[in-house]
Amino acid sequence: MSRAAEESNRRMLRARDAMDRAYAQPMDVPSLARIAHVSEAHFTRTFRATFGETPHRYLQRRRVERAMSLLRDTDLSVTDICYRVGFGSPGTFSRTFRDIVGRSPRTYRREAVVTGVPTCFAMAWMRPSA
Image (cartoon, rainbow, N blue to C red):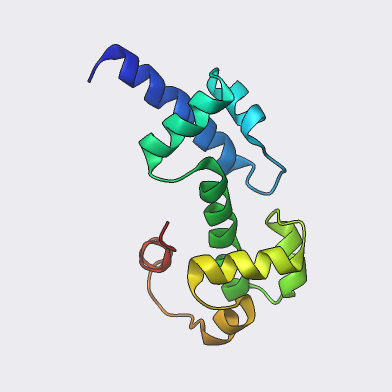
């Protein structure tokens, strides 16, 4: 791998790590591009080429993954979970959750079964696809 490709990957990882850390905070492409020290257009194009999805979709998926965990492990209302993971409205949350997981948050909660499987295996098995 060339030095330029390594540096590009490092920049994209820096931005993705920021999304992972602060997934519940409002984030936009300009701020993520600043973290990666590249232009907005270059950031979006390179992020997609590196990780296989747009920055917006990656952030949505991270939020939904966290919501899945909260739905399984807490008694918080769906609305509380929606705002806790960074969505601005319950409608957008439900629609995005259904698009990624294939069922509504309420249905997911009802059907989620707590098992004796280690968390790392459960998370890998239940991770929504891109």
